[in-house]
Image 1 (cartoon, rainbow, N blue to C red):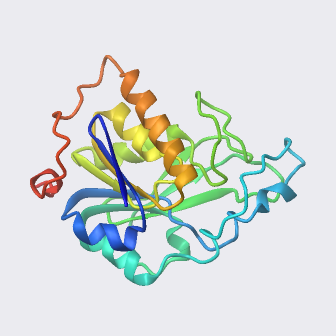
Image 2: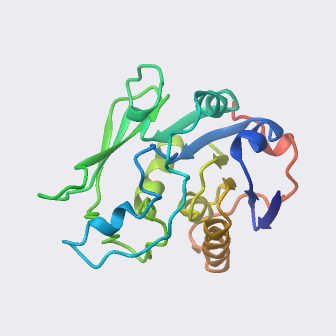
Image 3: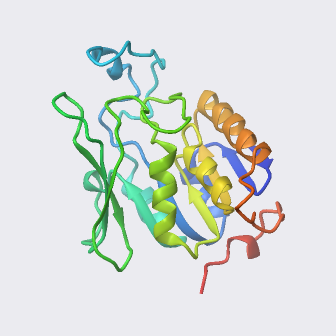
Length: 232
């Protein structure tokens, strides 16, 4: 296992099923797990009608969705959860789904993606043009299922009092970048070294270019139980 500390972010290279039990509690989970639909296996190369597709390599991380035990563990160790692809997993009924409307038009991409939450509020929606590419902001797509930064920043606004955010399926680190920009502490886990290195680079860049209007979290990089204590 490799651990990198960047500002108030602690990043783990390894299997989240093994690492999560060692972390203690956190305030919230914001994550986009694999759905088990094969996006890791160059599936995007068949979608060349909108733009020249990028070859992200062949992996097996999206061969199957996470084990139910992993989904359950994310809920056990956190107070609040926002889990993209919640319609693919076994999760209890909820009053609040977060809906990302991709404004795609007519093509083979999904019109929306759904994030299951345990938040006590009504369904909420964000419009953010995607079409298989990032169309807003300064993101560069470096992962086949990478979420736009603006979408993850919007998700954080629904857990405003959560100080420490965990993403057990960090990928290229978009959740971490959003946390840095919002002044939150971040814990990320990623098993693929190539994506882990991308996440480290992106989060380091976010730390190096802070938003002058955001007050950063207390500078305590020691991963202790106190750091992960749930919010009242």
